[in-house]
Amino acid sequence: MKNTETNMIPDTHETSKKHALITGASRGIGKAAAEIFAKSGYSLTLTCHNSINDLKSLAHALTAKYGVTCRPFQADMGNEEDVAAVFSVISSLDVLVNNAGISHIGLLTEMTAQQWHRIMAVNLDSCFYTCRAAIPLMLKTHKGSIVNVSSVWGIQGASMETAYSASKGGMNAFTKALAKELAPSNISVNALACGVIDTDMNACLSPEEREALREEIPADRFGLPEEAADLIFRISQSPSYMTGQIITLDGGWY
Image (cartoon, rainbow, N blue to C red; front, side):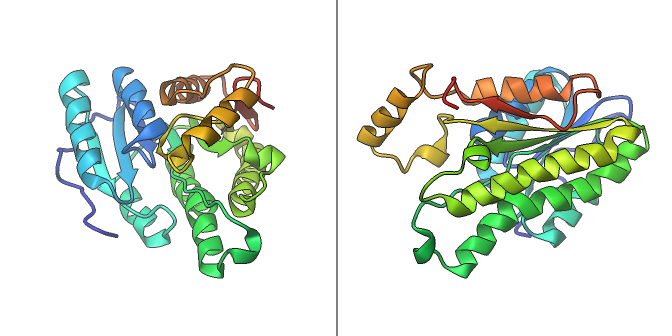
């Protein structure tokens, strides 16, 4: 783990306050989700892999704006030891948002084994590590919500994105299976399968490619990170009877 931040902002949240862990929170959907949860009074543990300065700034801003505790960590969520270090300072947890993820565009035949394993580690192994650590904390209170941020490619599959599609398809199956396992414990597990959300992950697209993609979407636009974040929060607040669902947010694309 590189420069894990544990003492930048004091851990003053009371046990009576709700606590959420959001991975990949320095930008995009994760950052927008952090804002919504903070606004709703949650104390937060936020992680990122590379953009720790951005995450520190976000944590300070949310603390100042909403008066909640925000703890930023620089951690590779695809690394078992890093995830264990993050959870070592978490004593209670109400909501887990598995948002950390990376993409890879290219022919499968040109992909290295290292690139394949990296996609699987960040996008899928991370869910195993975080959920395994989060479940005992949620069992203490016999409640909790896990929201996995997936993709429509995990349902439909995408040419030139085989590894990414496979990792998100695995996340969807993981979600459905774990939901059945945890339903008796009043812990819900759902996934949000996003279409094209206007984040840095799509920065590799040229203006022409963006326009062509936009024209395929019935809503005639890309989704906003704030829209995805709002739905993540709504899912986390839903009755526990809603579990094992893969909820699509794609502007009518699929």
